[in-house]
Amino acid sequence: MLRQGEPAPQFELPNAEMSMVSLDAFRGKGIVVLYFYVKDDMPGCTLEAIDFTDHEDAFRRLDARVIGISMDDCLAHCAFRDKHGLAIELLSDADGEICRRYGVLQEKQFEGGSRSIVRRSTFIIDRQGRVACAMYGVSARGHVREVLNILEGMQ
Image (cartoon, rainbow, N blue to C red):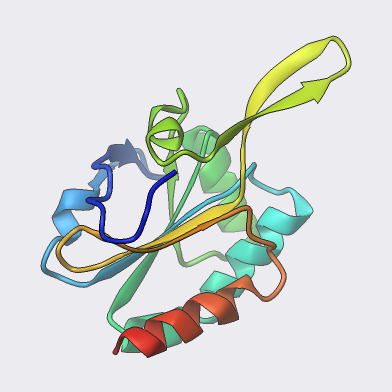
């Protein structure tokens, strides 16, 4: 698990348009709110993505960019974004490598075995590329307001 003050693990992942997005591109340019979610179109994930989108102006005023990551592919992200009118960037970590680096994968038992799934988590990454806040196992409902409150406190 990541802790406050640690360097945020770097990544370069494709977005819904299959263009590569890297964390390093934001260094010195603003705060990154990086949130990991289970799967496109699941109820809690949809609620959270819509809530982040609805507060896009508030994040912009706080000089923060919201990026969502799941293990869904780019086509699924594109469909999810278009279906719900999402304005946030969605990145595909299909092999789960970045999820592992951020410590958000957990083993879940299912009938017939187990598999790794993403634990809903959010990281606020400062302008220098360090973890300003790490929140693991968050609830979708009310989470965006919590993130905004943290960002306001950082101003």
